[in-house]
Image (cartoon, rainbow, N blue to C red; front, side, top):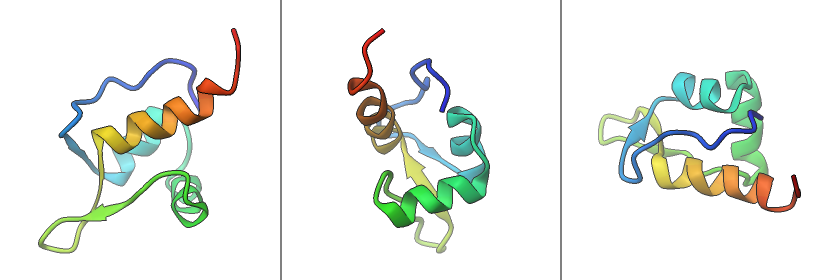
Amino acid sequence: MKGERPRVLRDGRYCPRDTAAMFGVSRRTLDRWVLAGRIRRRYTVEGRPVFLGKDITEAWERKYRLQTF
């Protein structure tokens, strides 16, 4: 996971590819995080997976709140 806070809009919707790139991980790793409950995946009306900016920020904060720099 990258150490810098992702630059996202709180109400923005981001595809899995972009979300994985923000964290510096593969899309498969992102899928594992969803299964582990580390980040929430939502779906559009058309059934496409998306990640909300607020969920991306919360996942990043949970990871880095535990670490001290």
